[in-house]
Amino acid sequence: MRFMILVKATADSEAGKMPEDELIAQMATYHEALQKAGVLLDASGLQPSAKGWRVRYADGRRTVTEGPFAETKELIAGYTVIQVRSREEAMEWARRFPAPFGEHADGEIEVRQMFDLDDFEPGQSIERFRKIEGANH
Image (cartoon, rainbow, N blue to C red; front, side, top):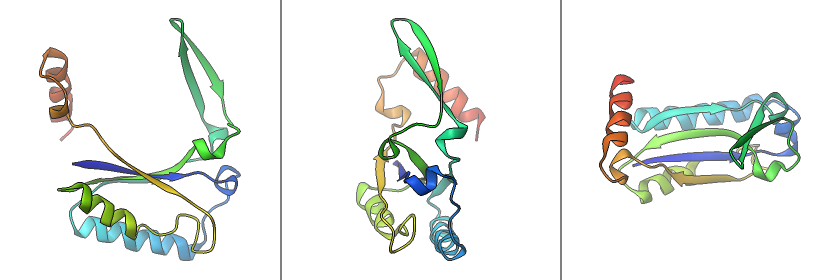
């Protein structure tokens, strides 16, 4: 089972404020533990939304909107992807996640289970995705 731990953005992260060395060290320790346990798949911080864009789909059209975006509570500042045996194991790892902006700063993470190809009905399109997945390993 794969889970994504999403770090919610704050006004500081959207302003491009970099984390202090102590927090980077805590994150490194946590991610080293994930790696040692064999459950870490990927992790990264994200640049502020001012450096990104959104594509909106409506009525068969695509509209591109350049960042920044106003509502930080809707934005993601970083993520970690883990592969574990159970929801409970994912929850235990999430409980250990360092406070994303420091112990005395407000912050929030959200954890979501990712779909696996076996979650979908078998078919030609799913087999195409299996070939893509196999080529990447």
